[in-house]
Length: 205
Length: 378
Ligand SMILES: [Zn+2]
Image: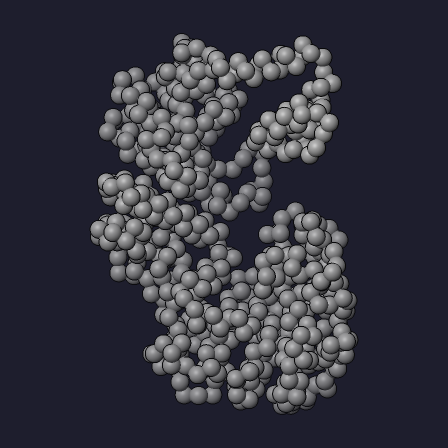
């Protein structure tokens, strides 16, 4: 791409480093920024700069936070005996959006995957074991993706947590609400049938 | 019920600029010199049945040289009236697959509805090459009808790769313990059991069918066998992994498991690859594919279109005659055959009570149809 301005090209190049953004889209973004008034673009770039410079990770759950302790871990309204283990921050957002969960989180920062060079030591597992070791935690809920690597990580965590005598559970996998059975893929349906539960438990909710 | 293509049309598909054929309900023979595009007609049917070529995974390669797109159409005869299938590929675009002018949301909704089974000289690699080719053949057939098997197989292969990466790292960096492999070994053991069980059950169904078909085609006294061998026959995967830990560590990969399973083809108890004549090997492959036909028919409730591509070389006339008699006998459905030698095919079919159509191809890209008078039933 050749333009009349090196400044424009530079901005396009930077925007195109973002995931999912090609040069064509980056050009559209850059031109859009040019059309805005200066104050709006300053707010934009300032927010990006501060994001990188000021964001911290919660000392308890390793979630992204503005303070040493994140809003969730600092809240007395949350159940501090319950810890949900997730892969990354997006999973926290997804679970928070359900408004169903009142416990705390633990963000691992990935799953074990030797092919990608990720071993248990690269994840925030030691911190999780510390938290559990403090004796405050009653139950750990494993909420990792249903991939091979997710399952393997669950297996590994279960083995490590067992030593601490804490209850370990795993989120249920099954059929989406409001869906027809015939449109559910066979594996999910099979799993849902294998993992069925007493009817009384399902009407209580 | 059988899959029955009534009409087939090709536009800019491989060497065919344009072709339009009315197929007969039973035996359809495509004859002509090499390079006239007989096999491409079969591949067109394979496309319409399975949404892909039998020979080449890249759709773009099937577009006729110098053109931008191809279009295939097939009209199926169905109890509720004809169904029209269309498949088109344009360069730089995705493949479009339609049924009665409505595009499929997922190709998997189509695959398996109107099945096809193809036999070609390439299948010889099943006998001649390494065990991986045979595992892929068996896995493909099982997975087509068993999503759970496919999932277990993919997870097994992935877990194996992770484990091998770890074994390699142990060797490079020192250290490493069986305990560090445990999360992967746990997964491997569970999925290996599913794969082993799936293969064993499948081969228990397939084997008697292969033997039966071999006897049906062959006129010789020889007997054939099919043996599935797996380290898991003797020992479960978790115990294998524990026992072979030292060996795996020095080899830097996982030396035993269902990824080493093999299928042995036998002739009077000896390896078919070394002791079978070309004719016997070919007959075995045909029997194997006919067994695939039977299982596909049983699982889909449809007799697939059976396609025999250029398989009669090195087969003696008596076996050829037996095979052709078998193919028209009601156990099979629509059959498409290619052969360079029209005379040989005419002779082998002469006097059989089948509906037979010949299509003669030439280098000028004309296709001449010849309906053969049906012989009186004996
Ligand atoms: Zn926190």
